Length: 253
Image (cartoon, rainbow, N blue to C red; front, side):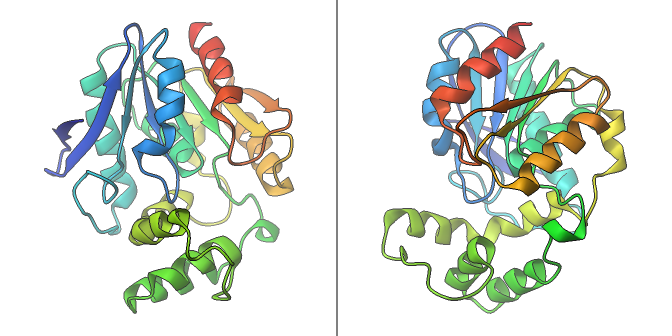
């Protein structure tokens, strides 16, 4: 593990492996950097890979999501990109995909972006406006388990795996959900997608829900020159073995 300081002094933890052109991996909700350890190992066969804990997660410093949450996370990612060096590419999954695209749009010096199923809601049918305030209320009341249940299932009803290690990990990361909400923003795609000026590959899974497929298609249309590819047999939790060669092919192109 290595650490760097973001622009506001927040300590960001990351791992580095491999040699070659650099790529930085950004994770989504309920994830710390270790979720992508297997993907990092696959990509490190040909590249220098840096994968990091977003603020408030894992070994990075605790942090609260204020009104400037997106800007602070972009600064964190920019610091990791600076540590990676010139010619860095980005791969982001879920809210990490939004973060990767936001960094590119805001001028963080990256060469290419691969974005897997950024979770924007393109219309009201794919969004529950009550979800965010209910999750925030559960966190404010000290009810992280309810926050997890709401985020995953839309209610506080038991989901049936609360006694598993996976649940413990999600419970620990529940306080970072406001960062994911901040990245997703209101219904509709952000206008700044038109400002992304580097090559972009937007991915979805052939077994993903309709909202994800619709969103990815819309993002591919909104980003100038973006490519769109569907990975057969995959869902939102894409297999590392399935996505690694697709990332490698696009970054080498």
